[in-house]
Image (spheres, rainbow, N blue to C red):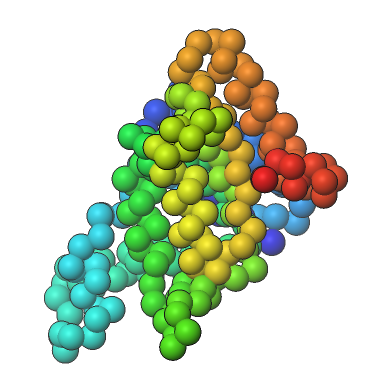
Length: 215
């Protein structure tokens, strides 16, 4: 089994999402000792934002790709191949300005390739990256899950669930710590709740616990 561990927080050792994603990987390996891990730090090694050069070769319009297009295509191919070769993807995804870090979005843009992770048919799009498990370690400074207004401002977990679902991945599990900027008591409670989620979603709990954690 191959696990891809992806971090995207710019906060280094102060990052809650990095802490939680690392703990999720440790617990997954304890439950699945045959797992090998590959690590990708998007804060240190993010692809360029999606551009015409990144799209160029994919369109097939130009007979002779430019050097810039060949470079960007090589980056995209390396990232999508790494993703497709993984059985489990653990993602540290902090909540930045109501969404995800631009580094994480740039990575996802490189994964969204027709014929690799999805295709269009006469009945609509079909995801091609089926059979994978995605675990998202989500951190939020405030609390957004408990009110209608907060949920309307949340484009972090909702986006990730949609985009991975578009790729054909139906097993998307969330570990959430929210309210981490609302004082030490709130942060401690958030981390405790998130660690209970980690125990459930990494296979160290009953199926009923898992369903409750990802509901």
